[in-house]
Amino acid sequence: QVQLEESGGGLVQAGGSLRLSCAASGNIGSIKTMNWYRQPPGKQREWVATITSGGGALYADSVKGRFAISRDGAKNTVYLQMNSLKPEDTAVYYCNVKTWQWSDYWGQGTQVTVSS
Image (cartoon, rainbow, N blue to C red; front, side, top):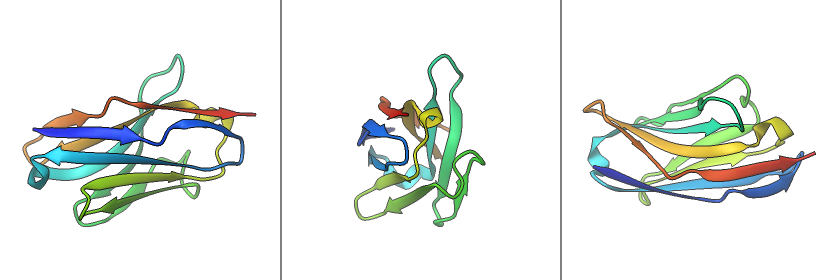
């Protein structure tokens, strides 16, 4: 099993920046990818970004060029640096890991609110 603890959400004005963190513990060696998802108010959860075990990064078109995902292997932590935030980025952001055994683990979610 993998446990995830998120931090870093909050309220920011449009154009501002926030950095989310997600610390993983437990069976770290089973992690294949670390991911961020978000769920805007009244909408379904959507994928935001992925970082692979090899360090490759993928982004949803809606955040490409503004968000950056990174990973600190020594701390077993994944980050999401969010720049040039827009009101439509307002959502609950969830950390997720997918393991080599095809399991999914989720963090508790952290609220990000972008005011116009």
